[in-house]
Image 1 (cartoon, rainbow, N blue to C red):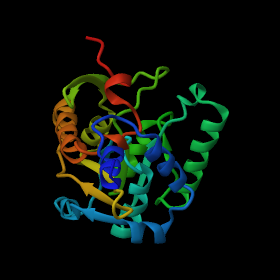
Image 2 (cartoon, rainbow, N blue to C red):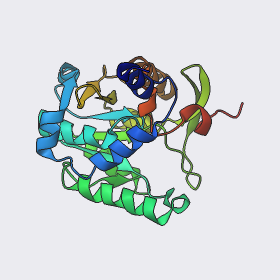
Image 3 (cartoon, helix red, strand yellow):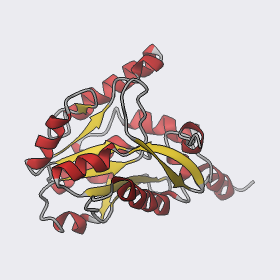
Amino acid sequence: MKILDRLKLRYFSNGYGSKEFDAFMRKETFIFDISYAKTKVEIFGEKYLDINSRTGGVFCFLHYGSFFLSGVALVHLLGIKYTAVASKSNHRFLSNDEESFWLGVFKRVNKLYSRDLFFSEEKPKKLIDWLIDENYLGVAIDVIEPDRSNKLSNFEFFGSKVIFQTSAARIARISGKPLIPLTIRHCPWTSQHKLFIGKPIMVSDEVQAIKEALQNFERLTLDHKYQYFHDIPLLYKAQN
């Protein structure tokens, strides 16, 4: 098999998850910094932040690509104030090494984001206050915490019935800020990352807003599903 054909099979798979990409993404978290973001990330859709005069919003994303690098680029390339919501409640399901890795990632990004990460265990008012002060917040959709009362809804994603939480849209609605789809995709040919900012969604119906964001994600990741951190159709399969 020719080298180009092997690369296509490796990097343009229609399946979910790639051991090679997972290893690359994890290793990258030890080396990215301001300079790395400035040389490795190209941003598309910056104009959408100007629609609301950069007065804050909720970036919603899936665990796809080098998702923590997104925040570094937003802060240091666009000059906005950004942090994200992380979760520790599922750490009890992780091995000691895996938990240690993610705690290390949290520590490293805290030095690069506008403020330390919020955690889902904290009072929601802290998140709302951050947004009302015209800052930006990143919230992952593909997180389910068994010990928390996540509000979940059924969605269709790449033809599969899946279940996601709608907290990102709810936070946006309560704060009066837009929900903004965010996707970072790695290009293996150039070793660069492309960061896509989607059109802001003013939330009236939380489920509909997440549906619109998912459509944006599908379009941008269709030919690069191997960069998903999770096998979404398997792990988030709807029960009915």
